[in-house]
Length: 270
Image 1 (cartoon, rainbow, N blue to C red):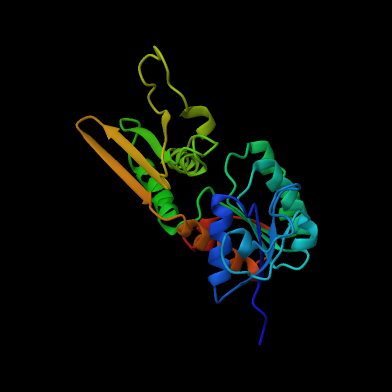
Image 2: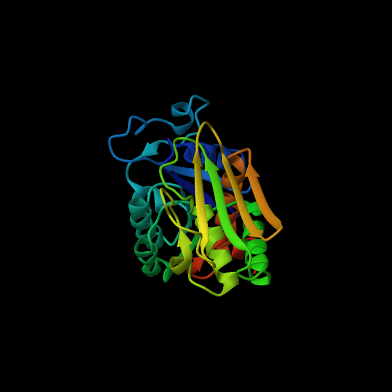
């Protein structure tokens, strides 16, 4: 019988890292073969299961990503932008599918993924959930159907420990709205408002950010016209939906040719 695809998780001590470890370890479609943390982390050398407070899983936490990637068919990476760029090159060297859930990447950092995508599969998405990706498609269609008489606002809420704003998902939704309108988000985004800002500029796409508590993720796309509003909403209540989506992407990429893909491709929503 063919061996199940081996998965390496990076940033295993983080919120998503721990969830990914659990989801992969519990899966009957993949096996956990590596767990990576930054050099000097207290978990290095420990079994990832016991480090997380559970039963041993037979996988030691390593600070050597290249060694870990060499025995994997996929890498799932929810870390930081600079680390993700480095991991992309190493995953491509190992010819492993690289699933990227890292947010806060600049356009320049995303461009640095292109050389790796010429040699291996990269699946990058601002959000790995089915519901959010359906919301993205709906946002694009609604934006295309409604003209500038309808103002577009993206409102997002996350837990108080999130370090980037707006969220990657909010920016993904903003990009979809801009594409629907046939404009560049960079030309029409209002990402901060404070003080006497003047009237809202027609055609712009606004962003508002909420941070607090343990909010997993909530996103509203508001189309506000004269006398009516249309609100598209997604609310995540369990971080496992992102982990399950990431694993789905890792498995989907096993028989694909090199390239840079997203969850729309994985879910067949194009």
